[in-house]
Length: 107
Length: 119
Image 1: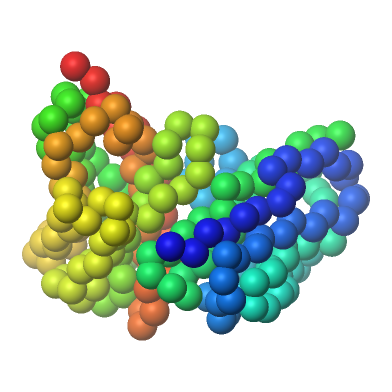
Image 2: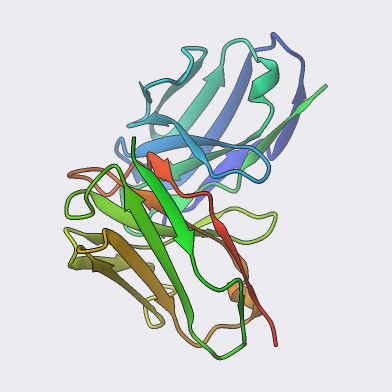
């Protein structure tokens, strides 16, 4: 199975900061990469799919980029409601696999 | 608006079978991919499997020997059965909708249900 190595595992940031989270795939994958946000006690919420497509209703401060093995989620200006855990997902090769998560905490 | 709701026992004894149902409203399970995903407490997410067009299934290789996903189109529900459970199967179980023609992304999720395996 493809391993998605997410970094950092956690970070502290302030409101207004630019935040970047990376997922590295264990082998080259095409464009089936998505990003999810999860808050405590809640189901994951889809933010980005197909590497850089913004899910309907998701604020434009969220963006995705990358190719081959390296993919990035960027939050351009962190808002109070963005403090959460973020996961990447690859569904290019069976089975689908998630990154281990990045917890974004308040500095 | 598509809504999913998991239901089933919250406690299962070791070696027994875990059975969960996902009730779907606002959309038909006869289209799209419908998935089960789990999350061990405080951990990451693990894809379990999907059912597509109510009959085609695919499962995680690590769980394949123990998993069955089925659908009841008359009730617009799909179900998960996981046999011979151990403490390692204790997790929050989510059902989620995949794509219409692709297996992902998972855009609608149930709230999740915690299943504990313990005697």
